[in-house]
Length: 284
Image (cartoon, rainbow, N blue to C red; front, side, top):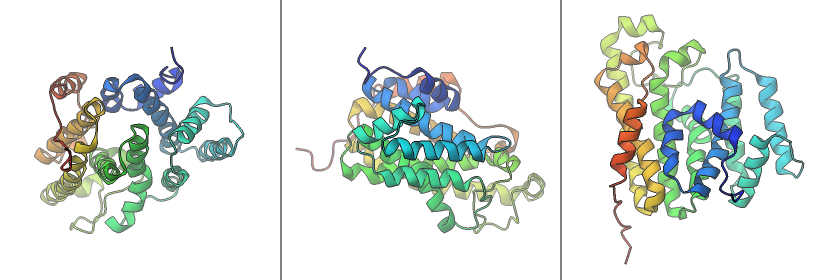
């Protein structure tokens, strides 16, 4: 098997363990793209796991970050998660600033616990999610005019993660969602239960924010070849399903982590096999 299509085993295990939605959606990428997506996800997931560990692992995170920088400068780390990512980044010509922005957002999770405004939060989302959309755009050789939509897709998906993971983030002492548009003093479980109507209103307003960003992302579908769009749209559709579940019952986020079943993932994938994207407006 060509090394550019062989799925690296370690990153595949990281990918499958870290995101059932993304991993199962990725099976419909062509082999070379699936391999590169797996390498990308392995790198970003390992960094994320260091800062999300209980307790966090700052020493391990900074060692990982520094090993990446040395590998990028020409000294291999010996860790395939890092070295394969560096090879991918150089082959696909990732902007190194994107990776540094990602690492900056991961590092901030070690110290910053709350965000008071959307303006304050958006730089974190840029580094933690929007640049992932840009990495994917480069992996899939999408035209630059599609990049804005790709970053919006990353932003919208990250925002749904914030809604879905309120209880988990509370346990880590974090609050990503800014409270500037609500009368809630905090997102303590007792506060949310005691002001249930306001909490429901707040979460539904945040789902509406997600929906707006998601609509901007869908505008980019016209620039994505169909062989790549099937897994991308599947992941997006599953996030839309998560948004609908939270919209219908915001208090569900305190009872369970809203995630699609394997059956739902595969049914959504199957339905998207028959999806045809709109042609670009300037297509001839």
